[in-house]
Image (cartoon, rainbow, N blue to C red; front, side):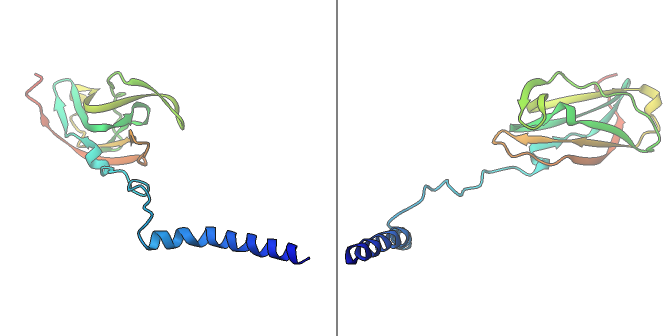
Length: 165
């Protein structure tokens, strides 16, 4: 009977020591966790990661685009462009550049745009002359796996571009 009690006491003390000793080691600075264990990745603000360029009028319609920072990507299928002012004006479907095929664990097979400048054109010419603002919705992620919620911006349309007569 005394042997059973002694074994239980020994096991209890060993268990308690195994729980408490690492705490003392950490407090004394004898044991260090790797420095990157709790380090948050350096993630850019959404407007830095996806820099929406000004919307320009051209002779054939509108041109807009994004500069996407290296290490980030936009989902092609999550881009929506609508008239904001006046909201009743209907615009044609945007002509999006060809995207890179990508398999996403949440959205399945999609197309994305990675780092660099990517332009979108909206045909319409004079029919867009009354349009003053666009409502642009988009969503993207960092390559590290952090994704931003969908973003919506109301942007002004600037004067006719002379770069594309």
